[in-house]
Length: 265
Ligand SMILES: [Mg+2]
Image 1: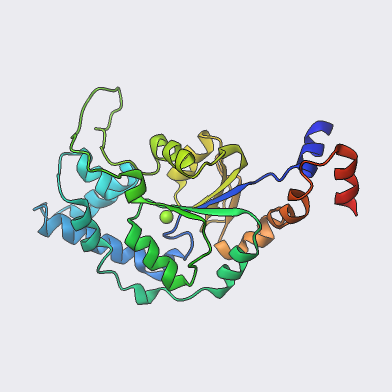
Image 2: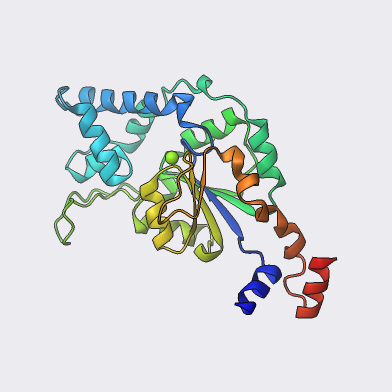
């Protein structure tokens, strides 16, 4: 026990903050998510010829099962150009619904820990959202659809595992493969990283892979959630220790006595 408390004082607990974008950096009630769903449904009907009757339910179910509807559509055998899909679904969004968020910008800028984006969305969408929110320059790196899926994977559904769902060739959260890839690309040590997301499925995988988890958009804490924030704006109240890294980081390689003296000084 004593060893643990010493460790907390001498080393910053977190070396990286990993952020989802949609419905995490801005609230669900912005209306953007509803527009995304509308565009996805329209894509499914007009481009893939899916019957209108249950198309919305189907889109939602695929999203729930696969993390993105796109990944689900590929899993069940639909084939389409990813860029075409993204420009139809995200390219036509009314981004004017998102407004600059100087409060969040200041919070992020004041955090003395490196920050990385980890989103299932495409690069252009992430860039547009960050720009609308006024958060350009707040993040060291962006891991997005193109980072996780640099080449088109033509393989279709296969049954070579015992999973009840057909496999998708798309790499995205909440699958472990996406997290493992993100850790490698951004040089992330999960045990020293705090992951912010609005999706409980993503948080569940995140927790199982060693990340510390923050559920954004809810005040309920459940098993695999370490912190729950109604809004990303509440991060300072919920996690004041993040700002304390300033005091601890410059002394982390000091001797034990020096560390204790510095911290209490
Ligand atoms: Mg999200």
